[in-house]
Length: 168
Image (cartoon, rainbow, N blue to C red):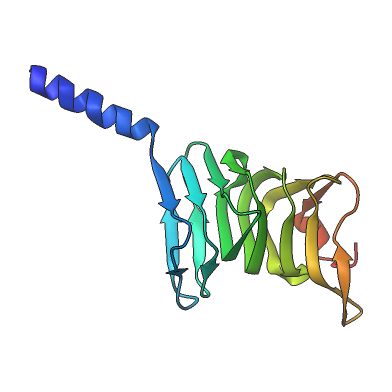
């Protein structure tokens, strides 16, 4: 009985420190667009940019943090199942897309997309931007011509209704 209790306490302590960790200097490639790296870990610390065309999927049923020691973390695609449970604690540049199925993502750092079509929100998904944590696009598509700028300059909500009309 005592051995079972010790094992249970040990396993429970590991549960509290669950993390997905990528060390600085590591080369991590997500290969082709069919690659999907799913994380249900509480703490996701990625200290090197990820190359390739695959996606990082944050899909836990409890709070998840995405952090990095890099000033700006570069990922191919970020897919968030429930934004209510995700805290992004680093500036991000996403090469391909940001997909949010549902929930409310409050930005605390700059998030940069390649263009305005790279943002894919589910019907109940929203993003809160602020002047200190904007959602930026490297190319905004305006009347079919690319330009550079912010999707929003003030504190604002972005929801799927805005994506029907990309010229908000």
